[in-house]
Length: 159
Image (tube, rainbow, N blue to C red):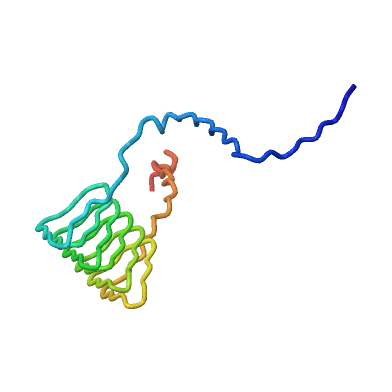
């Protein structure tokens, strides 16, 4: 009644089954453009400050303050002014102060100014003249205790 059958291997092209299509999530349907770093190329000189929230790579010259989200100074890059960013990588020159959470100085970098940071990394060969100031977030202060006035009988005693 029941007979056991054995499968025999067949030669020939393998059957390829299509993969199931993934279900798009809400975030995937609203695609935002990819974030691309802005570039100041080697043949550009900017007289004045540069500000923004994005990423900036400087291969040219900026004479003024730079305030961006993330800054990379290339080997041919030169900044004369203060730098404020979440993260800074320097391969070129910065003459001025740097204030950033993370600072990385590569072997080709030249820094003449103070660096205020949470994390600082320097490769061998990097030139740095200035002060390294570790920025520490202030500790939460306890709430001030209210000053209580003395009881009325203590205030009105005749001498």
